[in-house]
Amino acid sequence: MPPSLITLLVVLAAYLLGSISFALVASRLFGLADPRTYGSKNPGATNVLRSGHKGAAIFTLFGDAAKGWLAVFLVSRYSSEYAWGSYVVGWVALAVFFGHLYPVFLRFKGGKGVATAAGVLLAINPWLGLATLGTWVIIAFTLRYSSLAALVAAVAAPAYALLIWGGDSRVLVVGIIAMALVGKHWQNLQRLMAGSEPKIGAGKSR
Image (cartoon, rainbow, N blue to C red):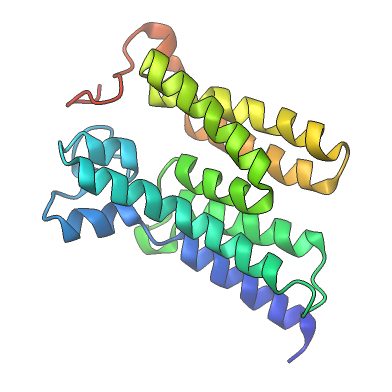
């Protein structure tokens, strides 16, 4: 099989993996309503938490993060065997991330990508992932706004990447993920500015 075809199939597989919505998987496993029918209607861990079932929210969080980590880890693990350069790792990282944002299984209407981005960054570089995740945790647990934590972490991630790699192409991949996260949270930003954004644990989204 030609190397270019193998690369294409790997990227496609990463996208399909990203398209698996663990919010829906968790809701079915725990007997909950479809997360697209309540709260923010977003198929993500924060909205699943609004159902009142913490176990389902944790399952969603770890599932969405794990798929991002797994895709990048596997392609990095076998990159030498198949002579894949860092650009293939970058394509896979973007494919699994955008698969979550625009999943083929949900008519391209997916989640906001925070957990999946965290998994991707942890697989690309553990220090980058931990620094970005730490930023999210600090903001989320002090100010109690998941969206604000995501926005701050998204802005911080490319800065951390620059500190680690300088002008490496991987910084571009992190930057694209960061811009997509900000774009997905644009309405949340508007609600934050208006003072109407619900806090973590709120039972109802506005």
